[in-house]
Amino acid sequence: QEIMEKLPALEKNFRIHLIGRLQSNKVKYIIDHVCLIHSVDRLSLAQEIDRQAKKHGKVQDILIEVNIGGEEKKGGVAPAEVIDFAKEVDKYPSVRLKGLMSVLPNVEKEALDAFYLQLSKLYDTLKQTRLDNADIRYLSAGMSNDYEVAVKYGANIVRLGRALFGEREVITNG
Image (tube, rainbow, N blue to C red; front, side, top):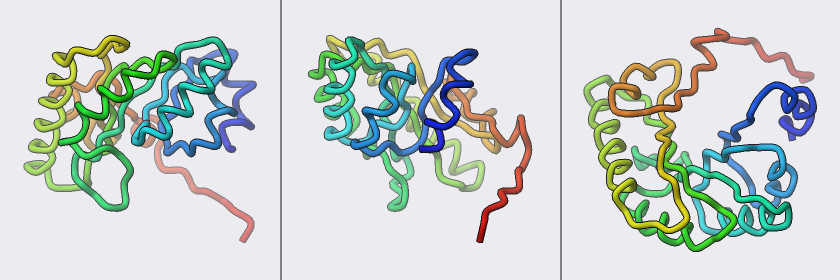
């Protein structure tokens, strides 16, 4: 809902990526405005993206969100299920898989390296997987606190909000 308010100004100057959790019933509102959806983590969502993209005469680029740390409160496909999930997504003609996205656990650097290594290997396996409707080229991982480690392990999209803009105070009514 927030992005819908800001889209008119943003679309003039930027290619928009949707990173947050996307509900299937909201796909129809964003499908014609975003170039890449980072957070596809269930087949019902991929199916709805396919359906809405078809209506708009486009092929929608997506990334599979991977829950690399197995955290219960985070979305994402379990690492062991990513390749099978990718094969299912590949069946949707109006969806094009472009790679993986992950938000890694907030852990010590040594453990972080292990998670990034696992994610990097999974990305390499995905690139070697035979898929008809995919163009695997993006590994979206790393944020302000760990982007250097992410890049070391092959991330080519990083999300640097805090590093660029600092902490922001949010003022609400109530």
